[in-house]
Image (cartoon, rainbow, N blue to C red; front, side, top):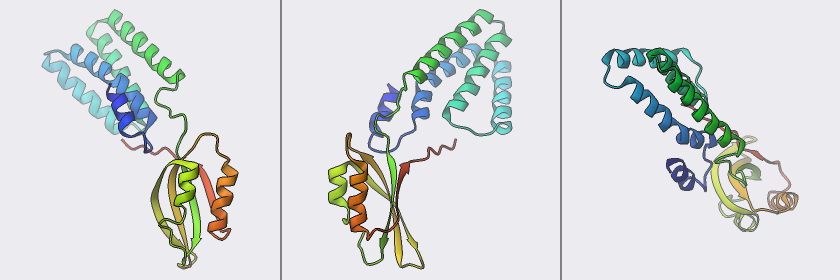
Length: 196
């Protein structure tokens, strides 16, 4: 439910698919850790030390990497406490759900956002200059950055867009080129940047 709410709340923006997948599995892993620790203070303190060691000794990765570390620690904790069967059940069950969600492309949008960079002359007002084209060819458009270029005689305007299904992308780009005076133009996938 939390992953679904996250996806719905961020459907018009670029959301992290790995974070959505992690939101499905992390509560189960945390529940296992809490069950294993129980009310034993020695286990809680040693687990805190292990978490601190892993946090400061590992290379930060994306949300799935952190989930894998927590899952390995939960299975290791279950083994250390002596619940070998439970550790096997945890590893198989959560691992199977993880694989199924990955194979079915859970939370992967069907029409991914793209980054559109348009170079325009300084005398062209970028506000509203391409609105009719965006309305015709995209389902959503967000201006994310404006940068000067060529000693201030040009602007590079960056948008995040989601194209309508079945559009002719070349026709879309040609329409923009007619407006920007055939200056540089690029479109591509947005790099997924995650920092935890």
